[in-house]
Length: 118
Image (tube, rainbow, N blue to C red; front, side, top):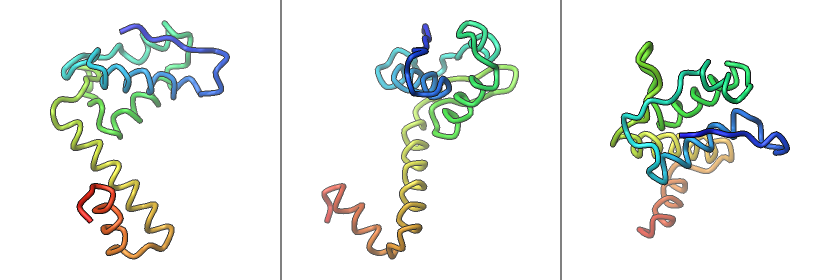
């Protein structure tokens, strides 16, 4: 996979890298088990600080798209990636409704309605 940055974009570089990886996973260009370039290698290719690429990879891992395996590198996750992403979305939703003061029963009813089960 070839990564590129748009220097004119208001989107921060780490977010551009993150979005490109997600798009490639979603369209099937990056399949489970594919090893992403090492942080330093990609940072050099894109003329970025290593911490910028590391942040993108860290956020991808937190969202369940990739898994870091130490010296083995950062790998696109397999079949449980969708479940991990759904769990992250559920956590974000729970945090949001909690901060809005929505009672748990109402929050669940909203989810059921969104899923067409309500």
